[in-house]
Length: 119
Image (cartoon, rainbow, N blue to C red; front, side, top):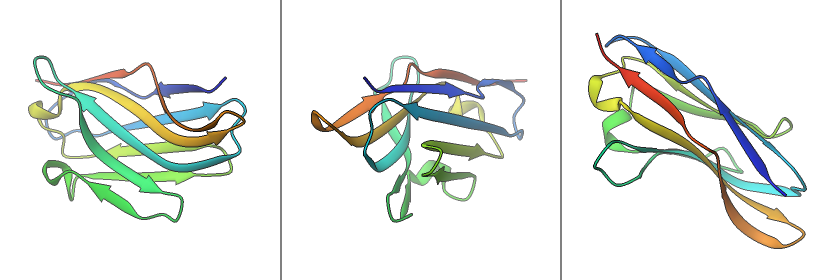
């Protein structure tokens, strides 16, 4: 069974920074891609950033230049460094991985961590 545990969310003032972490555990043989999604109240979940097994990154336009995704493959951990935060970044942030286990390749999700940007 694969588990993803997120941490690092919280309340921050506009212009502030936060770092989210997500650690994967379980019978994982390969993690192909890791990413962060977010869902604000009344809105659909959207991809914020992703990083491939080769280190190729992708960002939604609204966070380019402010957020940085990185991964530690050995530790099965993905990070999201968020800077210059804006109130519109407020959402529940979810970690996602696409990984291979004995049951094949699947997507796995964390439980979500709340990020609130407010003065």
